[in-house]
Length: 449
Ligand SMILES: [Fe+2]
Image (cartoon, rainbow, N blue to C red):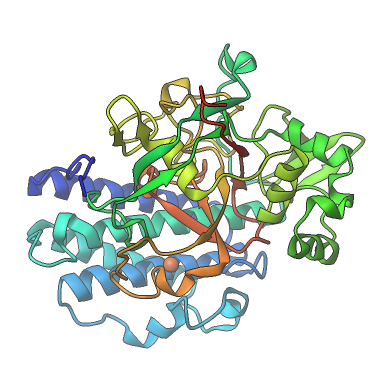
């Protein structure tokens, strides 16, 4: 197989890699600290939803994973507090039961995190990269930086579920660019093979590997994510009352859960949305947020379309017809900047549909990276040649028809855990995640219709 990818973007120079790792760990900890310091202690230990852990659990769990993978596995150090390991093992205790555990108190959890981090930075100065699979390209450090920012996103979702006076603030994204209103509704992606997944990205996780060629027939994809205004039309047209628009499972869930609108929408004579404790009128041209897979799927059917497959999404985001290569991001191989994508909790909401023209993909689609996670029609499955790494619980135990794949990352996702190959997955009924969607339809092949 020809590998059409950029090799080792972090550079093989150990000093550059050390600096990059230190910067990513620092950035992640900055966000963790902010999300856990803006609320008082009772809010840190309280469970805001049975879907989420108390924030203080995330805080110590992040430190515990860092100790486990970096200090013990890479550094060969002895466990600092082995007695607490089982408390912070995500597979041992479901989220709903975590508040009943004898967890570290906030001060202890912060102290533990601080101590681990100090030792990790000492280790980082002396570690030799490339001496094992874990240190190859700094992988274990990259995995831990990504793990922490993923918990920052989870903690942001906990903040959105939290009831009480607002504690988080951020400037709104810029208004839509001038051409947003005149963009074509859909873009065309020609049929043919492309390279999906990666074997070259040093910090890619096991489920993104290996690179493999997939033949994707021609399709059309929405230029932007589906907006609040478009979704409100689906509601007004009786979309939630027509079982023909839903799969059997989706309709059963819609009935059981009493779904009528996205999570956090309120009807007050017009639609309003609760966002981090503030209720405000819905912004019509903002991508719809907090819908489950079943709602996205029903909307697509109502619109006479369907959700894109995961391969379609990745081809639209990465394939460059001019070179025949799959790139790291829609805009090319360079890491994300604030000019090309809404990532990193800089804003606490998605940007208007049509934003970030500089981040557009070669096919013309915008906002594939950042803003909202996008549901795809695909189940979470291993790529051909998949190998579990560094442990089965990372991805392998989740493969199968129970989970649907989401792509592209949201405003709450850090750039270090977001790229064209990155795969997220969740149950099709989940709505607390920062998820929206866009729709697709099949060909015809241009010129052959
Ligand atoms: Fe975790």
